[in-house]
Image 1 (cartoon, rainbow, N blue to C red):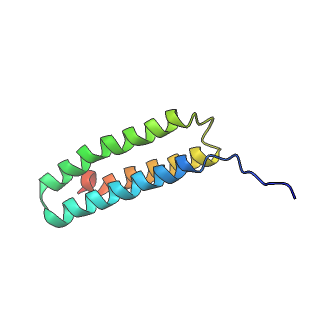
Image 2: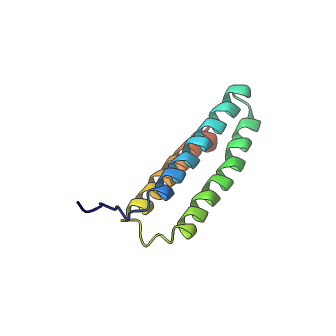
Length: 92
């Protein structure tokens, strides 16, 4: 019986989704500790930069060919989620 191997990079989208989850949890914690305060909005804006930097690093590390690949799609979904999490801080 021949061994089946999957050559798709699943680590990059997994780490991208983990970065999105961590960003969301940190923003949620900031808004819970500092409700309706401008400091929570500044914290959200500041935490968005390292989150997007992490996605950029994953893009470079994984040598992602395009957005139409599994790693590219994971990074795109995570970037959309991170920017959507920032939206209440901007509109606020």
